[in-house]
Image (tube, rainbow, N blue to C red; front, side):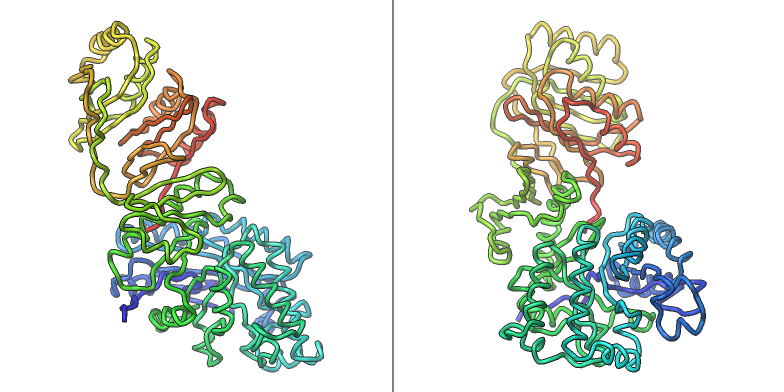
Length: 562
């Protein structure tokens, strides 16, 4: 039997405390639990906080304190800053993720309130949508007495659960564009029994069973994930959700997240392996975590090679999704797998094979990305091109393209390599009149002699390799690029004509942003570029928004997945 991981990338993870609140709901001193995670050699730790609730939605203990904005409005607003400071403090030691558990409080004032709280949770990695309170103001996960009062108001066990599912459906219809995960879908079992119609929902003709099937289908259609939450086990009612629900979720291809829903340091790390055993029992071999709202695939197995393959897959998904708008990101992509990635064909329903081609192709809405961790082979074709050795600093490549464009010379493909010693090398395949090329070289040698140490034009030359280990963007929309991905990458799709790419390069040079690596490709009159760069993200995004109509697409890709 294959060994399972001892660690999980949590989603519904460690609840952060609410600092000044009289009723604590989590851990205030987050450093203590981070230190514990580092000591255990965990690669990541995940924090979560509840969005503050309206005054009318309070547990008994909270009513007794007379605190108005429950779960700490001030601490909630401070939450992103706390995480940013922790990420800076522990940089290079552990990956710190954070999310928000959104409190559903109905479609009127509660809806507006909750939307405002999502906007306040700037840069959260994900949002979990949860129903804790009934419209009657009573909690589903409060005391037994509160649950019995709600049961009496609703008249029957079926009506109790029916109301809860109605609220779940209402939440998804209202917030489906702003949440990624559905929290503890069978939470009411904490205080009341599950009716027969729900226990046997897979075969029952009862209206409650049909409503629950509809709820699961809605989750699948919205491409939301299901929270597999171990807190129920700790509280003695079993994992949320029960296995029958999880099996149906698997049939509907609903991804699952896993988490311990921890509220105290001493409980950190409990049930990590058990959570993977639990989803494996339902047929899952992988689960998802989130980074900047984009799902990351995680294997349940302690298999280094498989983890590496998932890293390649995650980077490809992240790259493709950052080319798309928010609505398109929710669409489930199509996959093709080849070579060493072929085992994924059996794991992802509807995926296709690419035979011996050792790569992953991910596509949706007419766009595609192909990635691999195999170092690309040296191209065999011969081309006419310009070899350059120069200083490795901002503006150098822009200067080279500028001079070529002034002579009407179009750069068709490009290779750039930093030597990590203050110098760099480049090869540009070009198409132009020999006299114009000679004129361009003479001009550069005359004006930038201190920048370019060697500039040579060769005909029938071999494209240099300039490759290193890493995850590679092989193709964008089928156009070959072969760029080794770094922390920040710009990808563009633009009109393929002299001077067009110069607009981008000049803009980057103007803000002192260095180009670490560069790859160009083309398809008919459409050009593609991929640039590994180093610079301030806000500055870069401002530049990309001003490139003009000749750029059909220009995106800064920032990689957060591991």
